[in-house]
Amino acid sequence: MRRTFHLVPVFLLGVTLRTLAGPAIDPSQAREIDAVAQEWLASTQAPSASIAVVEGGKLVYARAYGNARLNPAVPATPAMRYAIDSVSKEFTAAAVLMLAEDKKLSLSDPVGKWFPQLGAASKATLRQLLTHTAGIRDYWPQDYVPAEMLRPTTTAGIIDEWAKRPVDFAPGTDWQYSNTGYVLAGAIVEKVAGEPLLQFLQRRIFSPLGMSRVTQDDSAPLSADDPGAYTRNGLGPIVSAPKEGPGWLFGAAALAMTPSDLARWDISLIERSLLTPRSYTAEFQPIVLRNGKKRDYALGLDVETLGGRLRIGHEGAGSGFLAVNRIWPTEKAAVIVLTNNDWASPETLLDRIAFLILPPSPELARARDLFGQLQRGEIDRSLFTANANQFLDEQVLSQMRTGLAPLGPARSIELERESKRGGMLTRRWKIQCRAKALQAVERSYPDGKVEQFTVSELYD
Image 1 (cartoon, rainbow, N blue to C red):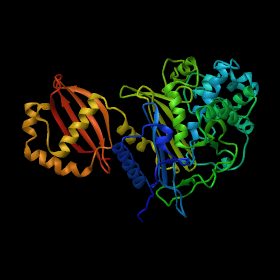
Image 2: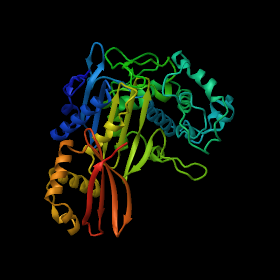
Image 3: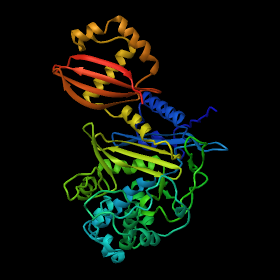
Image 4: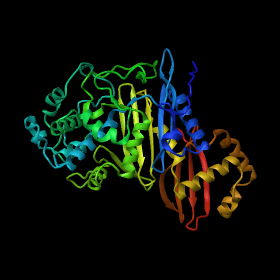
């Protein structure tokens, strides 16, 4: 059966985006974002997706697509809150940094200062908790909700059952994702601050940044005015996802908010406006293990350099919800995608939006231009060598136009690898169009002349 997805106008809490965020996104860019979002929904069958886009350090676009609830259908809106699951770790880490600024704790403090009864885990430091290098056993590695997690628990219950177990490795010697470590970090925040974690975050982060719609979905499902949670098994029907039992998410994955609220947090990271310079240095510094190996993870943040660009952020995955938050600090840009499904990663949609809004590198800009020329069947022959111009005669160009033009514009172009051969630099590009993946092989001389730019279908 064909699914019908309803689009809604761009409104945030009854106020247009232009009023809240200043200059709006370019209309043609907005149309392209809308197109890739609708394509993603159609291809994945995800019920809905809600996005926010930051450019130039400003929130410029927010829109929701599809249905927040099924049977009966309720269209998604930008004012609805989605569970962000492990993106919540960004805030728990920030809370620890704020308490360090207050000189109430130090990142080098051992966990045993507050929980001496944990055995080997008590020797891990706060920094190791926040960088997943403490060796503490993760209580939720599964991609489903185990039976135990359908029942209520408490923070103390998680700590007693999981943090007291033998560590998986000596603290600081390896990296292994651990929700348990963040529950423990949240518990330490509460002990040191003398107030509930959510209350601390509200007072020190959410209110100062104007994040007015933040809530938590740890004690109960989100309200009827927010999206429902959906799952599917294999390629089976879409059904309501089970809710994790109260108490399980806490400092690891408890928050829910709108993409626009999360964008306000991202802007604070771009502008470095909330914490001290020393805290931001610590927050963005990838961890180095005792053996000297570096991991692309810092304090509650993935920290990666991709294509010469610094990118930070986090993903979230829970029962019936997936989230991805990516920030490019140098470009003052960010993209947030939240969705109420747990089978189709929104990372693909985010990458396609990023492709539209981020300024391309010179190499990417040229590949994009060359692909567009072949789709049109008209090339700038001054860019090519004599050999290439002889190969790209009118018949070949006509054939390329016939095959490539119907695919529509490239939704993403990614450099897969570079090598040298025959005095030329060879680049292999992966090009994703609406419904087909392609591979382009580019060969060029040091003077920039293109000897080859050929395109073929990329098969599984």
